[in-house]
Amino acid sequence: MEYTWDMDRLCKYETQIKRFMASNKHLKKEIKIELQMSLQNIRYMKSLFYNSPNTMSIFKQWKMNSIQKLVKVAFQNNEKIPTDLIDMAMKSASSFMEYDACDFNQSLPRCNFSNQELVDMSEDFFRWIGHPSYLEKFSKYTDPKNHLLQFVKKDDLYYSGITMPLFYPNPGLWILINRENTLLDFFTLNHECAHAIMSSEETAGYDQTEHFFLKELEGYYFEFLTSQYLKEKLDKKTVIQLETQNFFNFYLNFNRFYITQLALYMYQKKRAVSSFSIQKFIMMKGLPFEINETELYNALLKNPNEDVRYIVSYFVNLELENIYKEDPEKSFWQFENIRKSKLNSIDEILKANGITNLEQTSQLSLQKKIEWLNENNE
Image 1: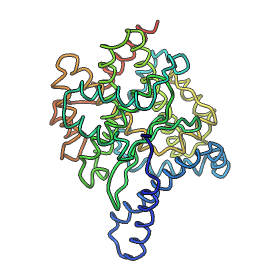
Image 2: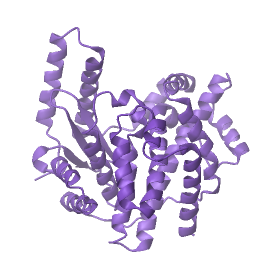
Image 3: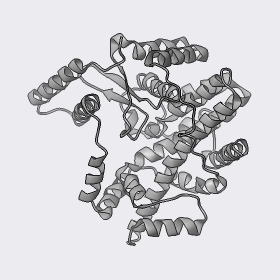
Image 4: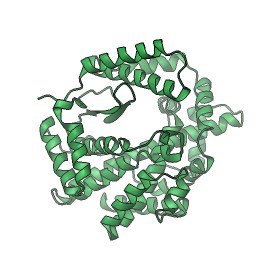
C-alpha cells in the first residue's frame, strides 16, 4: 500500500467544518480559532498533495511587503514572547564565535530506501527505545491503512518534515516527510513521529502557556536518540557527519533568530533596518552570522515565536543529552516528565525535573557541543 494522505477524507472534513461554522454563529473564541486553524491546515495539505507550493509566491510576497512593514508585524509577534527567553537566546550567541560551520548536506551518502524500508527502519528504532506505548502509537501513524503519513520529494519545500494538527471533526495529526534520499530522512521520520506521539497526549490550552516553547523538544531529543541507535549500526564517521548536519540546521535557525532580533532592536530605536546595517553590527560583535537581503526577508517572514521555540527546546535537549551520557533511563524519564508537566512556566517545569539555571548551563553545553563538532570534523 502507498503512504499517502486520504484526500477524500480531508475534503469531507473541510465541508463539515464549513457547515458547522455556518450553522453556529456564536461559537466560543477558542473553538472558532481551532476550527479556522483546521480549515487553514486542510487547505495547505491539499496544496501539498495536488501541486507543490511555488517558491516564487514567496518572492512575490517580498515585493508586496516592504522591510519596514514586515519588521512591524514581527515586532508585534515578538512582544508576545517572554523576555527572559529572548535574553537567554541572545546571550548564547557568543558561543558560536568558535563554530566552524560544516554543511555536509551535499556530501552525505545517498540512500535510496523505499518508503516502506524507511518505515521499517523507524519501527526498529522505536522498538529499540523500549517503550511499548511509543511503538504502538508509531504503528498507528505509520499504518498505510490509516492514511496519516505521506511521503513526497519536493525541492521547493523549505522543510524536510511537518506534523499538521486537525481539531475537528475528528481530532488527529497528519505527518508529511519530504524525502532527501539520505539518512537524514530517517532522522526526519523519527522527529515527526515523536511530535505526533507527544502532541497526541497534550491537553487543551498547552499552546497558551510556556509549554509552546518546549514543543520542539521531542523532535531534537529523538534525533539525539536516533544518533545513539545508529552508533550500533554505522561507522563513526557517518554518524558524526549526520550529527554535524543536524547541528548546522539548528545553527541556521539561530542565525535567522539573531538577524530578526537585531532588526527589531533597530526598529525599536527608530533606526533604518537593512541587511547592511545588521551585518555591520554582527561584524562589530565578532560573530560568525551572515546576512543578505534574501536572508533578512526570510527571517522577517517567519514568526519569532517559532525561532525561540526551536532554540529553547534545543537548549533543554542539550541538558538531557548530558544526563543521557551518565544515565540513559533518567534522561528519558526527565524528557517525558518535562513534556507532560502540568506546570505553566518553563522555569517551574525544569526546576521540578532537576534542571536549574538554564541560561548558564545551556551556554556551557552549547560551547562543549561546538568544541566536540570542531574536533571531530578537522
